[in-house]
Length: 286
Image 1 (cartoon, rainbow, N blue to C red):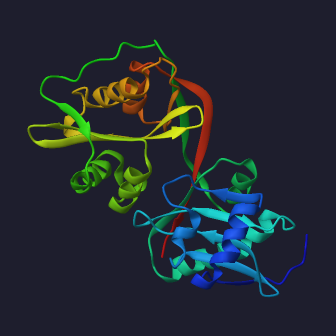
Image 2 (cartoon, rainbow, N blue to C red):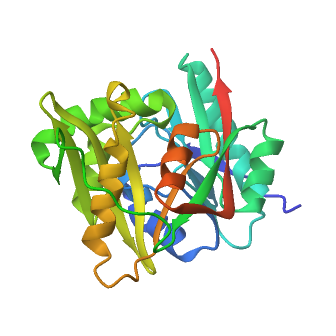
């Protein structure tokens, strides 16, 4: 083990350039896939750096968004450092600070690299559930028209407050996207639509372009509107919009234990690819 005297402190604005180099050019890193870049969280109290000889050699960003869920947005270190050794002082500082703040929260990560999973498990993180990946295969299902009482239309800025409420009601606090996150998602996506009936907006979807097609990044239906083919209408419209030549590859991921979502996607012609990503959590208790 390399014997280094680390100095841990909160990241500040003056660290921007050094963090940018570490984030974009270093291989030893975990990055949470969302609508923010790691640098956009700079200034959050749960953003930490390790220094050695005045040089930033590692960083950990785990801001709470939504409240009480601190997703690990980024962890990375210089290539010469063993990641486990860079992780420990950063995690010790972040964990102690959250405990000191008497902040009942979960620290969570979606694992895409085995080495990071090993680090978190050795630090007391536990498996919460798995995320599974599915892919739509052309011709596997007959697309349907929306029922007469509902219509699909493009999402507008004015829809975001109610879309945020639907997201929370459908997914719960742990998986909830805040209004700021949904606003960013709408600004960056390839498609954002809502379903509405006489009562107003009752569901939405946001999708992105990928190198091989489209990815259905988010779909939520108001709980009391579930069972009315709202999700089917959203997915059908998305496929029609982007599948004019019949070559679209559409992917989606969902929790392995989300039976309602899995049932919808199977009905729509999605099949599991075999890929899955563990979700690990660490409960912070005062």
